[in-house]
Length: 128
Image (cartoon, rainbow, N blue to C red; front, side, top):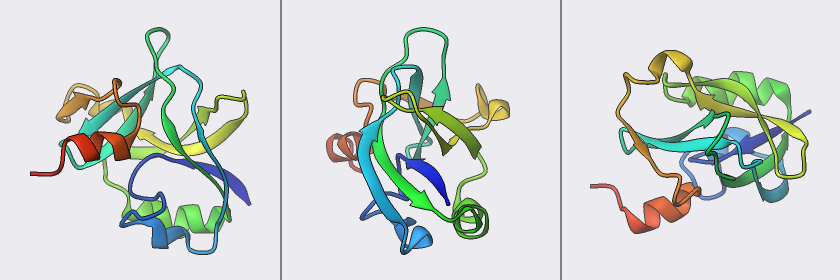
């Protein structure tokens, strides 16, 4: 079992949530204020750790079998994301999907730091 922090479609109600079926929700929490949050091509969120100017990004923390992360969730994630680790608000660390470095500057990234929450961003900016 491993802790997995989710910010997008893997969260409750999202189209990928069934990929972590049976995983226990540990907390609704946020990251440390050390991340930028982007909407990639307005399809999904991506996190990037920064040295300064970061925000605390809201999400859900799950206790998930590592085999589920690697065998069910990651194969369904977009190519622009990869498995990484994020620092949570309480100082603990968890696995998360983060922006691949090679996509920085090449993918259509919209800064959504002011929302710091994918659901809030979607509510205010419904998909076209």
